[in-house]
Length: 131
Image (cartoon, rainbow, N blue to C red; front, side, top):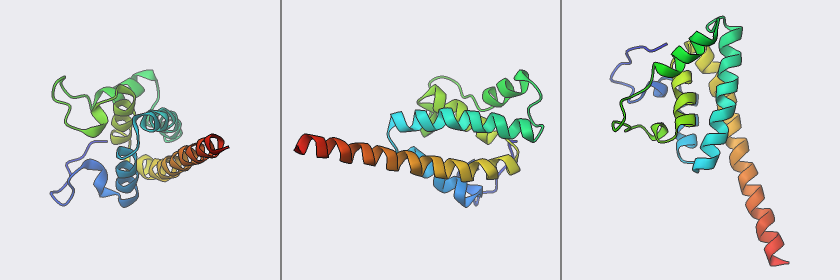
């Protein structure tokens, strides 16, 4: 649910330190990682919002996606550059605070795991090319 945040927070997700850190880490990953995490995030958000009875139908899911859309040409947020990432972040922003907190923990783990997985893939590629 959108709220008016005080001037103490620059962005809506800075209110929760774990969510803020997760978003910062996601922002600084490559595009492919962002999209993979976003797809998983959409799935997790739908599951959490259904269990919290926030989403009662497809209309609620679509509304959560559309609420954060910005006009074309006015995409100043890092997550507006890709529609999948934008959809996931809009859904997260429009979720109730308890869902945001629960998802932030899963998101943090997902981002870290994906970065580790990518680093392992690079290490394996380097080992194979050295042989």
